[in-house]
Image (tube, rainbow, N blue to C red; front, side, top):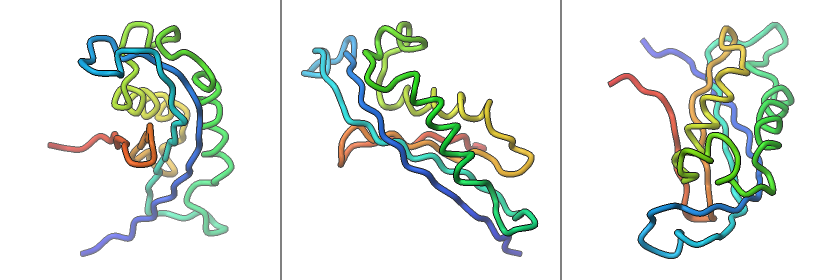
Length: 129
């Protein structure tokens, strides 16, 4: 039997600089990106007016998170003062921070994708293995 699943997404942007310690190439030098972050929330039950999760609530949660990193040097702010600020680590950090903020009784955080350029991004999710 197939189950209906709704996926809502929001896309936000932030700019930040970082250094990837130990990187064998140019990313070991100070550089910046205009990052794009996609956040996905899934669920199968709509509320009484036909909404899974309000876009404005999701955008607000994401913006609250991005305010911590926008126009910052990532290597100086937690957790990236101890963890390398790679796109992979930014995506997992964002995922777990957003998971704390969202009411998962209604819908659940499915994935966070961080794009550091138009063609290079990473998607982080939790899956059963």
